[in-house]
Length: 98
Image 1 (cartoon, rainbow, N blue to C red):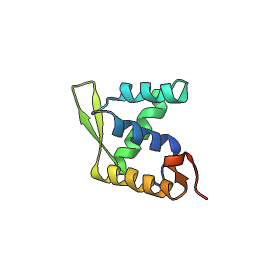
Image 2: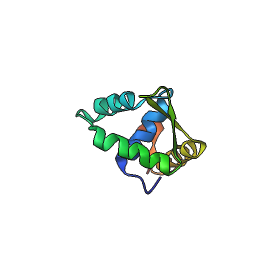
Image 3: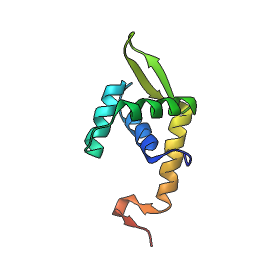
C-alpha cells in the first residue's frame, strides 16, 4: 500500500466500507469526506489503477454500471496498514504513544 496515493487509499477504505459500491456511490462518499467535487477524470483512472494492482475487482451490474469490491489482497493491505499505523497511534486513547 506504500506505493498508493492518499486518494487511492481513501478509495480502498470506501470500497471496503460499502457493499459492492458503484462508481457514483464511491464518488459521493469521497465528496462528503473531501467536501469538494470529485471529477470522473480523477475517480475512474484511480479505480482502474487499483484494479490493475490487484487490490480491487471490477464487476458489471448492467451495461452501464460497474461495481467494485476488495480482493483478498486488498483486504490484507488494509489490515497491514492498520497494523503499521497502530505502531504509531494509540487508537484507544486517541493520542500518540509515548
